Length: 192
Image 1 (tube, rainbow, N blue to C red):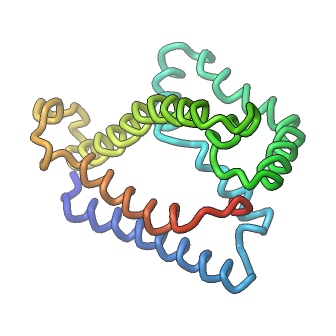
Image 2: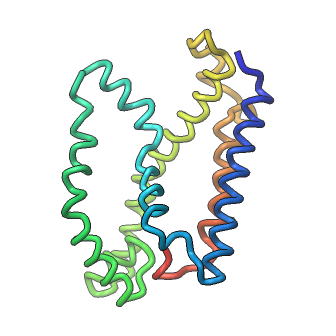
């Protein structure tokens, strides 16, 4: 059983390293020596595909259905060979039209309709909010499991907690700060 301060300390140390790497990468990019242009670094960054679904959903699905989890990974793997050509076209169109979002991309393909761009934005937000909430809940549950290990059974209080006692709120606040500091500084159609 780990103490709460140990989990929090390790988590903040990990986030500190992430902040330091992001800050260092930004400074190098501003100096014209970007790490992002390195193909090895770019390939390593593709690991963001592995979300909590990889650690919780796929393992659970593999345990219950056997090989039934495989199509989720088979599709992107088979698409990897063709994705290069599709991505080149998307990048070319985005740079030519200075497009920075999926809503701008779709609306520019259909006459730069602001109504369509707004609709795509609303659909994207509606689609992503449940996914983000699942990510936050999985991280929160991971903390709870680490706090109560080896008794893996979730305590009854984890089902309904007051807002200020739910670790997902604090995780969301930390991730929002990270996004504000390193994700939304400026709009640049050429930035990856």
